[in-house]
Amino acid sequence: MANEHDDLIDDLDTLDWDDDAIAFQDPAIEIDGFTADFAEPSSRIETGLLPIPRYPAPRPAMIKYDRAVDLAREADAFFRAEQRDGARLFCLVSGNFIFGDLLEAYLCEHGHIADELLIATLSLNQNNVDSLRNIIDDGRVQRLGLAVSAYWYAHHRRDVAGYMAETLAPAPRYDFAAAGLHTKITLMRCGAHHYVLHGSANMCSSGNIEQFTWERDTALYNFNRDWLERIFSRFSFAKKPIRRDRLWHQVATEAEKRPA
Image (tube, rainbow, N blue to C red):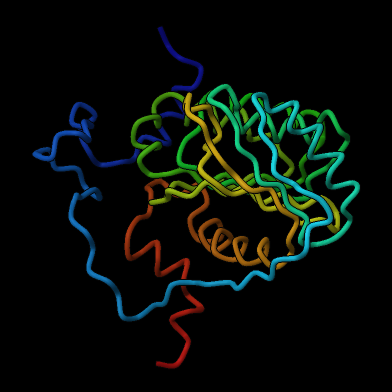
């Protein structure tokens, strides 16, 4: 029986390895673009660093939550009270917590609009895609950018990736790229407020305790937006994931220009 996403899947099906050979736990299998060896360090580039001043917090902002909706409610109250850069929440969450649900709950249930929502994640699932579509349908995002890991794309290019391409296309502006990422960073700009959510949590639940920090920090937002935008500007909807030196070269373009 034909699948309604067959055409989209055909467009995405551009990776040049054998489907039956995707068994990453077997070191004897050779897959183009993947290796267990460490790459030689490059002398052309430098690691990007951003010094972050730590502002005095007016009250403890360390919380533990089991469900994303509850955290969204707490975060909304916290950031409404703390109208300044440097406000931050350190969050410890249970295995029931779904990070993708947090974004939908914060934007849709509390009346916020994300002028920009940029997500760099190791993995996500179809429920996360549906949640992002809810944000789009509710008119809560103007620009959506999603960067996924090449590892995830290799496993899901025939199912979730095809569904995602069709489901998220109605966003006013939508960028997608697959790259050699292991980051879990979400950038969300709501008017003059620049939020960065970063930590161990992917979009979907792993069943494990996770931690992440949610902070309002314009400098940190711009620092991460810079390298992520480089990936989207050059490789959005690229037919093949980018990895290793080629990826880092793109991310660290400005670092290469610094004098030795």
